[in-house]
Amino acid sequence: MLSPVAYWRSAAADTFALVVYCFIAGMAIEILVSGMNFQQSLSSRLVSIPVNILIAWPYGRYRDLFIRLAKRSHHGEWLLRNLADLLAYVSFQSPVYAAILWSVGADGQQIMTAVAGNAVVSMAMGVIYGYFLEYCRKLFRVTGYV
Image (cartoon, rainbow, N blue to C red; front, side):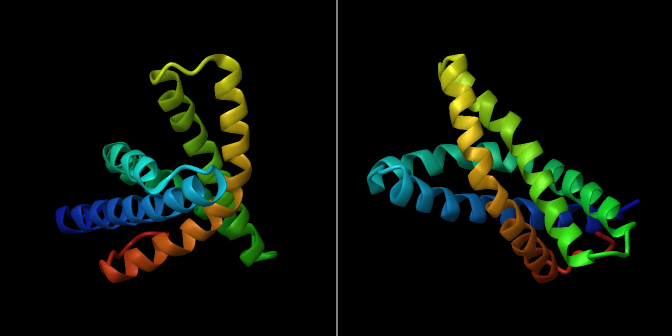
């Protein structure tokens, strides 16, 4: 069980990491891949901040579960850790993304297409985010995590 200070430090680190990472990565994808202009992307990223604040700490705990399961095997630890990050990110973020699309009026086909495309991009993003999250936890001096 985390102490109150460790709990808040962990929540702050996870929230900071997800908000910053999704802001930068999302903006890069929206401008460079999706063809959105800077103003559109900035608006989208600002709207995403409250969602990321709400899901950051639960996602951090969810990811830690995947990492713990991967660490049980001592074979190919680096590969299994990256695979755990990938699976955690895609399996957590895809339903969240689908719910956001549904809430703004996308139909079933649009949601399926967007979520499938996002899942492919998220495979690389999840692994990179895992390393960024670990870095942020070190900056925030979070102890007792995976």
